[in-house]
Image (tube, rainbow over all chains, first blue to last red; front, side, top):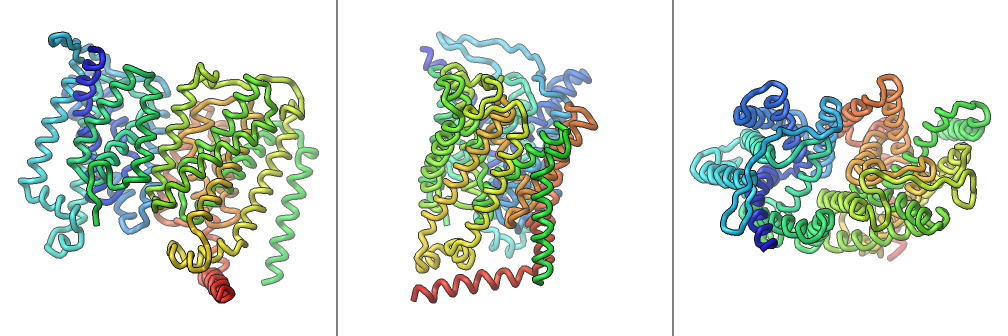
Length: 285
Length: 342
């Protein structure tokens, strides 16, 4: 029962993880960039919610919406200042520049808010369904995650910009010839990626308190999911998120949380080395 | 040209002599402390650049440093093993991990940013292992651990007078620079430079690229762990944020990038600048403001990668020497090597 319970909560948590990984995956698939500072964007989102809701007494939902918009703007800024000038540079330079962004954001939050945990104390009920205990916070995250992903699906399939994004991911050169401006597509991708980080932060509000070193673990978690599903493979990432959600949840119930995380990271290392196309992916070009 | 070389050698010898007599001339404990930190970080950064200059950007050196720190500390605190021995045990553990990870990566062609990510994962694992072993091996988890003090004891690498660490760290730095030179002069290195990433061409020269890269990785990991041992014996305190993990790994890489990772003196210059920047903010703004110095150097990294990807020293020396000449030299060396084989 205990295990079933943690499996269910893991699946629910997987919904938020899918959302988080989707942002990173999109940026990798379209712009071919590994967004090393992605977790820090989520962290900034959480801090913004804290500032608005606690310090300025803005209603919580409104704070979350404002934080999402602000993180999307920050992502656009990062695109213009850091990513765009390095589009033609070797990938390792892009990675290191984004590590610089990581450093700046983390220490800016440390300077502004100090090293202590800050959180919005939202107490949500635990639901009883039969013999299962389900945290309402996980359920909200799951529902928001799936709705957002469904909207993204429609956006990517039914709108011109969305189709252009997918086309660029498949073949940037040909798509360029066909009259799509890759720079505009990249910009939209970063805006969407940032917004996803913001929504992820909003889903995290009832679950986590934030601190300056909050982001790193989530950057890595997003990576692991993306790697598991195959980089740039959106469906693979979606499935990977639920696998990771369940594995983390079950292993921290049975073992201690660090050992669970270590196992996940070791699996991730193995996948990078042996199956870089991902467990679920197919070998690309 | 020869005059310039002589002048350069003269300046270096003068600097070295100055550094050797420094602790006898000036009694400032604070300056001594800063110099020791500069030496240790220059050493670690130089050792990192053995790989960095091949384009093997490791974000896992924080893990190797941490292995050195914690192996020594745990062996001494729990079993009273001398840090001199702990240093080698730590180094060997680090080298073994580097061999396994490196061989796996290079064999399957995990290079560039994939290699960086793989080693980044290693950094995160090292932090988690230390936290997970908080009780089993008394690592103290996030709170950190203190080395048991035995006063001044050369056998246990503990000295009340920090001057000993000054010379130890200086010796390590000189050793690291010496090995850098040796690697730079090795035939395999010249040939690798000449053929670039073309592994088949390298193989035709009789160089097993995978083996060579793995060996350099292992050497670099071993020496980094040794640096960790000296660091923890000097500070007598270790915690996962300063002694291991992703943050430390990035710190090492950033020092190398700022100074320039392709030159002999680049890593040292980068470490010098960053330690001074950190100490300046700590001293004049207060330790609560150290994060500001990290913001500055995070920004510096972004700007440098955009405008001067070869780092400060790298760019300056490139202007002086002319890049073409150097490349021609290595190309020539590679060709000669190929001809000798035929």
